[in-house]
Image 1: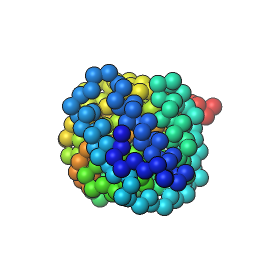
Image 2 (image 1 turned 90 degrees about the horizontal axis):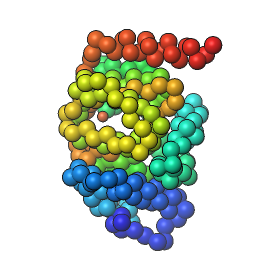
Image 3 (image 1 turned 45 degrees about the vertical axis):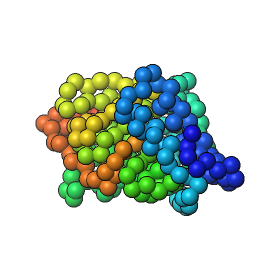
Image 4 (image 1 turned 180 degrees about the vertical axis):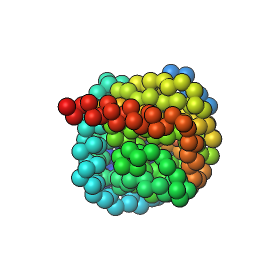
Length: 240
Ligand SMILES: [Fe+2]
């Protein structure tokens, strides 16, 4: 279990610790445990919650709050209900942030909808609400509906635990593949990956296993405009 477990925690600390415990349990129960997943579990176990001061939470902006609540309501798969319930309990306990390109060099175009709709909360990391870490980041990541998160790469090895019922992914510009709730995505260092979100917001747990202050690099592709147009058209059709 998480090192430094403290039974004298207050309500907020208990809720956050419960969420981390749910994430850890899910990672451990998902079939054969790969070397990378073992490393992730080990990093979670090595976090010393007791010695860290919990950061203050901030209020989420109202337009994002609706998206966040919808993402949670739509994450209905029984396999991940425990984690989703625990995220819901912690909504006001974590610091929700929108990435305004701080993970990307100036001038990077990650995608219009990505810029508008991304949201994350670090549980563990440089700004972690549970514990500070400079070599490990674990948190909740959300994208709004009809979003292309363009092909990108980073030195940091990355995990996603999908909580939404569906999202589409491609790796190194290969074919798009659909992933369901409870599935894991493993991006080794520098693997190029892109995400497509359709009608419902995308909700996930993310982890960076190192190099948490690295920049991401966008890999532009000729089909980005076309994909964004298709998503926009689909969105407009839902408005009629
Ligand atoms: Fe990534």
